Image 1 (tube, rainbow, N blue to C red):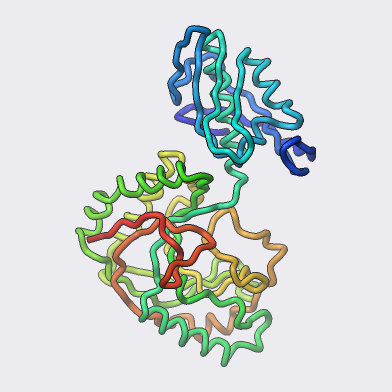
Image 2 (cartoon, rainbow, N blue to C red; image 1 turned 90 degrees about the horizontal axis):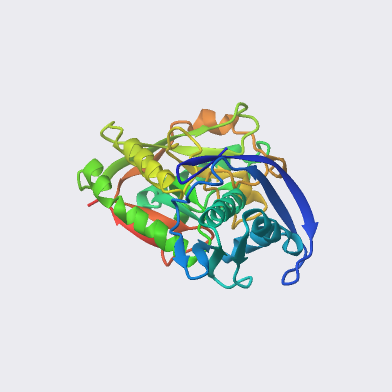
Length: 348
């Protein structure tokens, strides 16, 4: 089931086809078949205008998704146009713009808009993450504690299976991931930035307008076998023992989920910072930001963390005052070595 603007639609099994399109090289089209429960109802998510020739509606769609609406040799668009008795005008591939749907009947335009939204939602979920809400843990004291942890682990546990220097996090990019987003053009990035700024008053209410004093102590893993670990995390808690950080991050995720900018993965945000990750073994630029976009586990060589957990289970990385939340861009670096930020909200 897919929730689009408060309405529920059923998506059937996905059929994959490989084909060649005039403006592109060969690529895979994953065509979503669906049953929509409100095809003849008035579309409430977009304004349908009446014109001299009938009705018209425009939809902002990132250009990377055009091909899924066009389909193999234009078949998907033709089918949509035939089923709804509308005309669907799509900009050229790579050109950002609006999809324009016109038709003689308002109900037909409304149905076409809804079906296009279902297609967009289906294929958007298959795109890799581009941005994430982050809380930086790269304070100098935490980095110093991380360097000490890394040196001791390599000194005492390097003989354990899979343990080597390549799987340690970049200390300049130590962070907590609050949630991940797929933002496919500048318009979507701006929307997410505005949405984060809208939440700044709620953040300041929770933090009481002050930085949050955090302590980073201890490590943990999240799979069943400590002898076959892919990711090792540092534990993060507020020094005063309160749950304000948990409350803030949970509410922040809900704020983005309710706007359709994020997909909820957990009941609660998992507050932890990655210190070791087997994703880094083959690709030093790989990033663990959690979520559905992670590399298939079969491509990863796990490591034996039993001695690390036994020896350094209560390692103290340090403490610092957390002062902001950022909308960070994946695979980017700013002048400090951290991720580039699209926007930031300060707690103070």
